[in-house]
Length: 337
Image 1 (cartoon, rainbow, N blue to C red):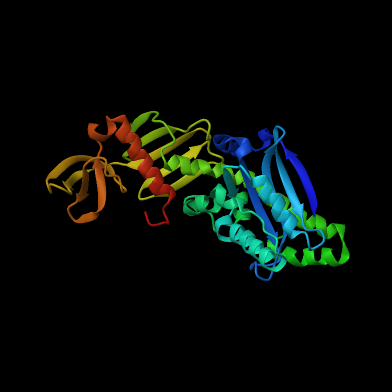
Image 2 (cartoon, rainbow, N blue to C red):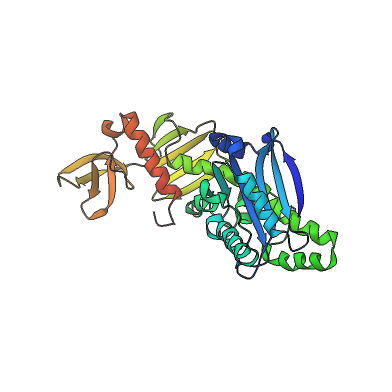
């Protein structure tokens, strides 16, 4: 087994550094595998990439199966690093990487009698793909492959291959010892690991959907009959990329440390869903918010609205919960809001 180690200054990965600090930098790992196939029954691991905090900076470690036989040592080294950690971050690891490692550990136990402790069950598993996938439509992504998300964030990779293409390159290395082949497979995994540092910044969107913002200025815009909410974002979790998404007549835009939520105002007579009483006034989209009385149009009872009055706009806690509800609706929509 060969080990490669690259130091990454925390200032180069500020979004990840802030997120990791929540758990304690020394308590988190990121990892990613390169394998010779999709099934642990008939393929094996040839690279384990790991991001971790050591000696005052982040590091990209790579354990490389340079002889085709070092997989047990690689897995053991990975488990040793994972011991005592609190969180394990990955991209699609719940579906592929973690089950693959466990499958290989079982294969090693059954064929070689070598027992390797499973430290993955002792930590919180955080799948970045699972966090990003709900925002696919809102971010305008054609898919949620790692390279696609990296392109959205403006990350340029040196590596031009995908994992499947590099299997033959790795097998060629085993037979020829070609340093170029070795460099190609290591570069691919190294760029995956660097990309994961930056993908972690999209965790901010999950925080926003949970209400991680404050109420800023509130203004009524006469032109277009709209309500405009300016929402300062937690400065510790700024937006990693400008955001623009629309749906249901609403618009959410943001950049850096603030969001702007623009909502259509409807001036008409609505019916209270509970009492069935008619009320004339100004109304806003309700989405699935139920913190105040919900109204509907007499002829269109499925779509809900809330009154744009002091019961909502005059109560900061209620208005904050309402804004968070609409942000969740806009960010998690599938083009059907």
